[in-house]
Length: 259
Image (cartoon, rainbow, N blue to C red; front, top):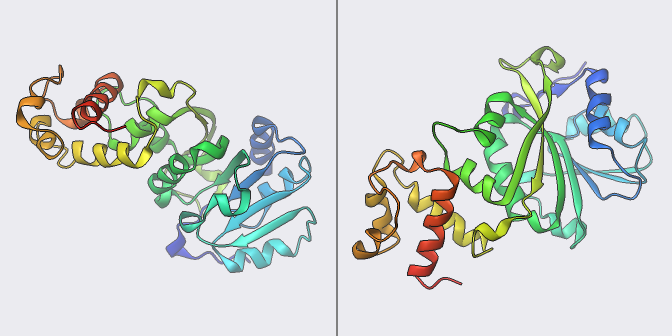
């Protein structure tokens, strides 16, 4: 009997047919450096290991690792650690990695920020998330969040597979999807690649998301420069589209001589 830790927000994907579909979509190669996040009892791990020479997994729940280790799969190393605190470079150095996994839904936002931080060593990411979260990252025709705009700068995101909630244990309240996240090759739409500076500026743009832009921009540039932005400064931050957002960041870089 599997006893899950409720505080970790665990939902185990238990449908083996869905797992085979996911592996088919991932198309793992023998020599790839693959990191699986949230390996659970190892159903996805076991299927992946059929196609790769070696696999690294990270699982925060020691009890689930004990269950997984009973399968005695030889070509896998499981690390008992919190993915949000894990240093990808410590394990992979500068090697390009492919990330897969069924992540706890409550860390969806933070894990995306983590991926952005390590984007330079990431080739592709295949993760299962809540359907609504995926849509918020991809579409956002009516409004954007600071996470969705940051994600669109650095990554291309698309939905690969819809997964109904009855394929999980325990069953969540809403359906999930498998998404593919790929580093955006057209990063030049932003004139600077320093993520920490972009994130700092974005946090200030969204300092109070219901206030007009002109009020939040006072935290970043002087009053005279605000009027030169060529953007409707009476907008709310969440009404910015991607072009307006990137143009605004570039303008702030230039105004503050950021390189």
